Amino acid sequence: MHGVLLLDKPLGWSSNDALQKVKWLLRAEKAGHTGTLDPLATGVLPLCFGAATKFSQLQLDADKTYEAVVCLGVKTSTADAEGEVMQVRPVNVSEEDLAQAVLRFTGKILQTPPMHSALKKDGKSLYEYARAGIEVERQARAVLIYELKAVLENIDSAQAVFQMNVKCSKGTYIRTLAEDIGEALGCGAHLSALRRIQTGGFDVSQCVTLAALEAMTEDERLHCLLPVQALLQGHTVVTLDAENAGRFLSGVRRRGAWPDAEQVAVYGPGTSTQPGEGCLLGTAHVTAGELIPVRLLSPPEIEQMSQEF
Image (cartoon, rainbow, N blue to C red; front, side):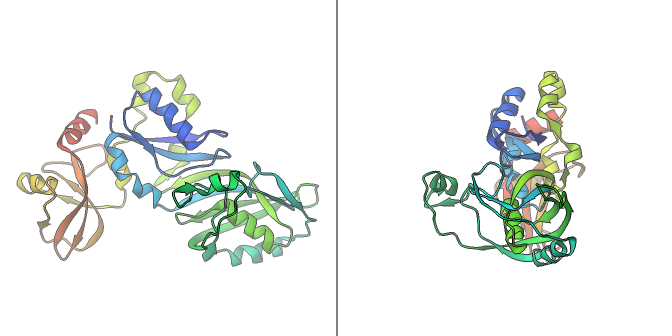
């Protein structure tokens, strides 16, 4: 089985638990997800099966968009609603204050990864150190916030919050962004809800829920799969003849009148460039007229994919 399933990850499930459930429902052998969503988060989680796992890194590196609810005045140990309350402060924030903070956190910013994260140090995830009560030094990293919108709600109530919409680069921690904005506002904050609504070229409107998937027949579930080519949106397309296709699949560079391109989807002879049709060979990049293989499919994978779609 080769393809991509766009799951609307349910609340309370880890990304791996959701993956294992869908893998079981599809009776798939090889599977992987493309970027962890915390149990607190819902939304777009592309799941890759078979040959699609070879290209999952493309989604890990993709820009993402989130909707979030941020609770003001309360700082927690994990920067989200799952942590222990560490500090409570009064909230005296105006729309203008929030607008000024939004400006400060738009564009290229530095973030220190949270201790409660899957980022590894010396072979161990940071959350393992955190659970043992150990704080380790983390280096601040540059991320890009392309767009940040925030609206205050319940400001006169006991629980002031703001709604946040964030379009950002890979590696952005929305929990950290929420906490940092809270500090900039002088009252502290934590993330109380998070939903990923877009990753790469995939939108939440394209996703299927776990409950819907469970209610389907086996054939209906298989029809939810997108072809492997769906992961290669935005790639330059190069189509090779039979001889050059064979050499390319052997890892040999090919020469041609192609312009330089960082991301290329390579197809065999007589194939269509439309997702779901034809025969994908792999990915490459073009430098000075040379088509240089990056990730290659195997002949059995190519044959199986042509039969599936």
